[in-house]
Image 1: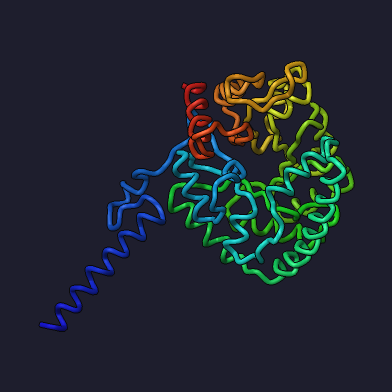
Image 2 (image 1 turned 90 degrees about the horizontal axis):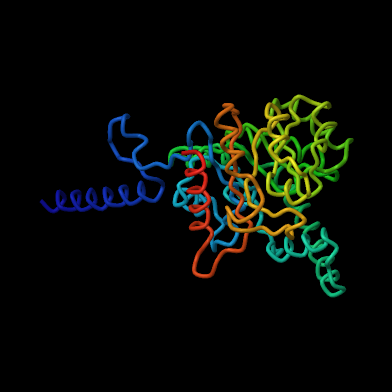
Length: 346
């Protein structure tokens, strides 16, 4: 009797733990028929248009782990993502970064816009030195890390109802990166199930040719992202260099750059766009602000309707960059952006 009681207690405890674990991992029904596999999972495929989110949107949230990031995505109602490198790489065991990424990114933006003060310039130089030392450490780690961890992360996300269509690792596809770094980024993207990796457009024809050759080798597309340097012809050379060189168009930045016909580039290059970032920015005449969706000059609604009507196959990626209102958080704001997309496509 005593043994039976112990067994029963253990069984009940194990069952409770298992059920709690399945709740944490994702909304699934233990032992349920296969017809219920999609129960309570997100679905942001709207009228033929896949709405996704770049996980950079959740950079203000306290926990940046892969598990926490998945929860943010699920709570936002999103079913497909462009995954940033940090959640994936830390899940795979990447050494911890000693550099304050938020401070580094803020100063990097200021430098890009030529707005660094003298003190900020010294601070940024120090952070750059720390980052260079750390990048060497990471490069060494990448030489030995197994792809099994990335496959495991892909399964964890997939089981919860979230697919990974793009992967954007940090410091992987730059001019100073080795072929081993580039090779690693392509292989990691494949292990995660991504159709393409993304990188900032380098405005360097030799580098896009090199990256295009590596992309061809791996049969993995690479989408070049643009900021305010975007023009209708920015990607032309890269597109000629390799059929695996593609666009990761940013519609908001395209508008802020002063391009007068943002919908025209979608129509002209739709077959070479792998994904498109969505944000609402103003034109230069209105101050280039990054504003709440529906209050700027970016034709998000019209772009989504164009994708739907013409059955273009690339996703629209929510990138949350406007200031989060007091009392809100990134998850709540991504929810609002998704709802904006739903109304635009209804």
